Image (cartoon, rainbow, N blue to C red; front, top):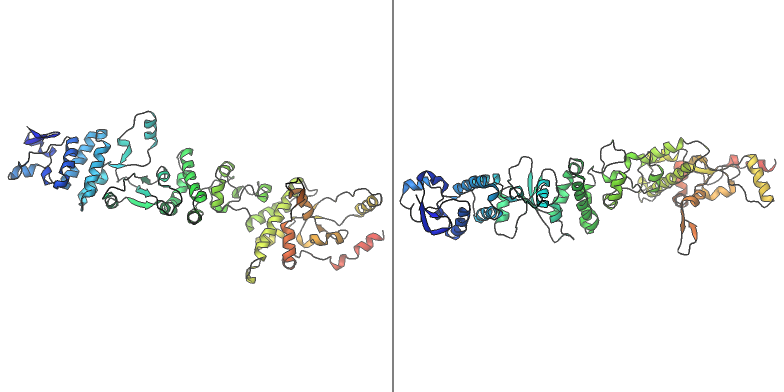
Length: 495
């Protein structure tokens, strides 16, 4: 069989007819592509029969492969034989040729899927180590498209995003995803990739539709901590640094995904919106009781902005308020500093919840939940008074001798057994009064630029001022001294 010598069409040689299967009829290829295919065949050590040799020889026509189906099969065989010697340029040339074909048969597409021709965007750990050692592996950079359980993606940025994310996203190691680096500017490549089953999607669509389903396994699987951090850093870039519309779209897609580890390590990860900001005062005060609702400290410190962007709460839900109230109600007198702090911040949290409910426009919705009411009906409120006879006598004697009165210790009581702060100076001697605003001096102190210290208003005083009648209705929080106790000051005076 007369064939062209490799790399020189003008020079000829002869090979046995038994090797005709390792040749290809180049002249059956479109003339526009004969030059490119000739170079590719030469690189693959495939012989090309001499021009005109096959025109009238039916025997040789039957022996020498021709057509795209035979060409792709021959190239697949050569790629397997040559391994890493089948260079990146040769692999690109194969794809370029078939990308320019208007119609590719099922055999061509099926064979192409099985060939490691497709440049992967994210190198494996093995390839990273090879690169660091100065020994890059050509074969490890290219993949076929027939791996079971794997979807192949090419990502691209659009003008609708503030930052470019495709490069970083395609470096992530996500289970069941393989990212391909594609030169989308070359004619026909996108259509070829589409016909081969590659998903070409914009980055925003990928992050809102595919990434949420991969997060839990990507962060909780066997991958390294560095790989997990890369996923979280990219998610942070979307949730924190993108424009408002994109931030909202991504947050809405991810906020239900359970991937955040809790302080209680025995529980499964939870969605960010089910967790409480560990820096919230009420969360700090009841940290031991809210372990199931607090993010793991190291994770929280590293990804606080992302968690807030995904809906991490600064408030407690009704069930959590009741849990803390039950814990506080079990405290015994005299109160410790820790218990005093717990009472103050829990009552502030309850007052915030009540303000939110009572401020609603629709009267039908201005009803607190059963858990909030149950929490507020427990022994959670700091109170003082009424004083014992001995305490009252000591108070009078100190006043008479112009000495400072001894502050009465705090006690825990229910809202129903307590007067609102505005009445406490009038009824302190005959009925328990709220000491919540007194305690505020311990917890709400703040300094201005001149160094002057002041105490901010409490949420309890705000809800009393705006919705005192609602508090009386739901909690029996008293705004005036009960009639049956009005005679007590007279009795005290007569002693």
